[in-house]
Image 1 (tube, rainbow, N blue to C red):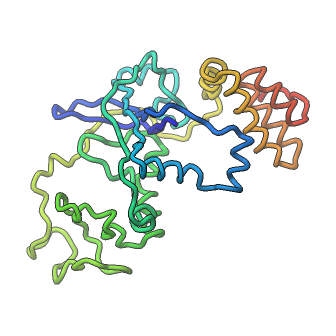
Image 2 (image 1 turned 45 degrees about the vertical axis):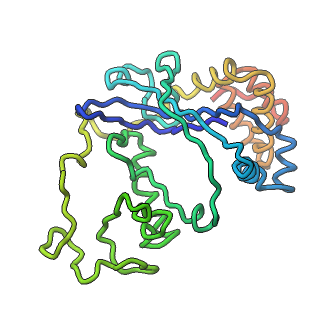
Image 3 (image 1 turned 90 degrees about the horizontal axis):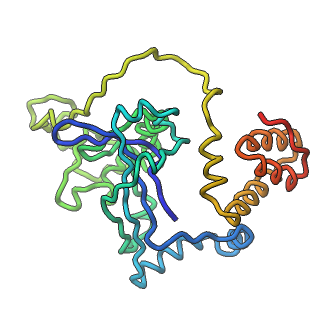
Length: 300
């Protein structure tokens, strides 16, 4: 399947010029989906089906790969969009912002120890290389700190010392923090040096401070809580349902929704759910109502 960054990011060049981007990882294998009925069976008989498919493909050197594309927009362009360009639930038109091919990702090696190399990996959107920065995306802004909090709880205060999370094991980059003590401290624990900045006891020094300062974007306006009820939340799903999906895809989408919603025992909640989804497309709403055994309610 394809992969997406979902979030919008900022990219800054050496001349301090920036653009907003969305990332698209397009499968080189082609899209292949499991029919809903078979997926239900596999969930019970072989819940690790997808993981086994990935592992076995790499093991037999049929390496899966994805081509990376970017959608690029200037600050002036996103200000003219009829929706919030940083809204996680919205996509950018590929006609207006065409995909630009920039590279490829290939998975060509399986982990030797799943727990040590996969389960203990601690990824975070706050860990960005120079030139890539966060956007005003509210969900991304929350994840910048919440992912680190999650790792502290899941792996402990010294999770950056674990080999999978410590680039020092590659002898190319050294992670410098003032984190000290705590469970599973496996490093030198800063020796006898004090853990505050700046100090005269050989503490870390930033050699090029300007290089690590994020790019600044000027914005103006009132910061307040705004009602989002008037946002257009149905045009893009309508295009997806009517123009992107084929008949088979629409049937699978409806079946997947029905299988989840029918687990609700409150008919009024089911009717309200259909009432919202009916705003996407009349046929969509009618089929959902019929399969869920409710009258087609007034759109909400």
